[in-house]
Length: 202
Image (cartoon, rainbow, N blue to C red; front, side, top):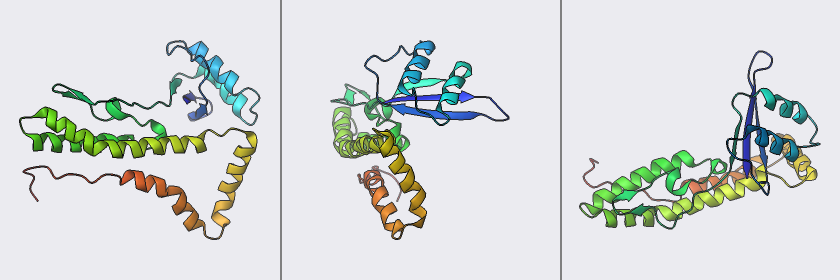
């Protein structure tokens, strides 16, 4: 998916807009701002509401950011005595909402695994991957699931989603509905048991 953020200093404050849309067949070069603006204009042509105004503001936006919602998937996170952690090894994309958790948990698990392995870093890296991969997979799957609700395929789907958001506070059983929606987040966030660090005070 493509993510783009445009900022405009109109009025007294700063207006920010986030555009999400399916990746075009040919993505513009990351240095070509004009091509990026053109890609956004094509993707949202005829969208209505305030979208034309936001697209017009792109010409003056000093901090246009255009990138893909991508994930990092690697067969191995280490080679020799060098290991990767966080986004460098298993970035789940901003759609997961779990990037910080993956980085912090990964650093802890890596440290614990290397401490256990003592003078054998290869064994430590292997233990790190064994412990982390199910957690990473759960959070990357969460990102894929979230994107389905972030980038809808038709105007009818957008209207239905907007209607449900408006009705949610008035619906009976809304707490149960919210729990059902947020359950995948809780499940992914708790999909690992942290190891103890050898020698750590209890």
